Length: 362
Image (cartoon, rainbow, N blue to C red; front, side, top):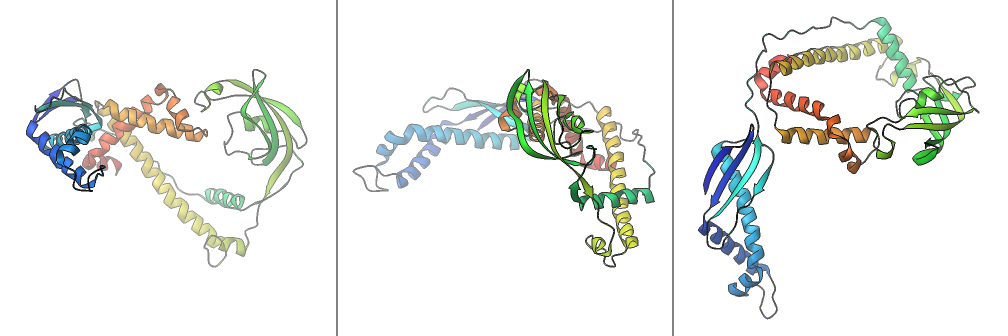
């Protein structure tokens, strides 16, 4: 195997590999022997088919498979020998193959950049000085009670923490659209399940009212025909419910692993958990500042293949948030995610410099 490596542009590399003719022929003969052991051909017993018959019938396809396998294996051997670290999938460029001659082909790809961290010692971060207060514990206790609450009918207007049952019909330019209609739809307010403006349009109304709200679909909405479109929804508000919070009884408190069932014990457990989470949040904030400083201080040439891969990840995540599928994810405009994708790749490359990066984290 002969190998040559050239830089095409920036991080681009082109590896040219030549496989000797005898290596190809030996591999083809070996594979034809394996085929001969398995095939059934009329007039011959299994495993007794003459090699010239096997070669005549299967030679072309076997040779093609062998060439593909040799190209892959020799490329791997070449990058190991040359100590090259490809970023992203390689692009094979086959040369012209002639029977009995050496075969030359090329593989084009990008490599990971050499990353030498700069400016680590000059990075300044702010570490927040915070503590868990009694008011914070009170708020968390209210949250725990809300999570365990029962729902009861409410006569008053809808507010931000209620639950509603509605019928709705949506339209754009006076025409109803697919997925824009539902009956007896149960919606817990404040969870952000619906498009912006939908919940706000329901607040302040009472059960039994019918009304129309105006909303606008987000530009990144999964349905192509609705992106950025103004829409109207006719709402029939059938039921409004509010939470009935449980009391802090001994039975309720024991659900959270507080064995003595006391309010003081629950508050202590809640405070301990909140302090642990607060410590983690402070650490993450400091880490985020350090990483931001490293990103600004290090101008890294980023492989396009890694950015493309990260854009696909972000597209799928965006589509999932709006209930879209794989096809719709790939249709989302690339430019919506390009900057974020590049930053995530840069952070990942910096993280690869684990020694210095971990110092930035700590």
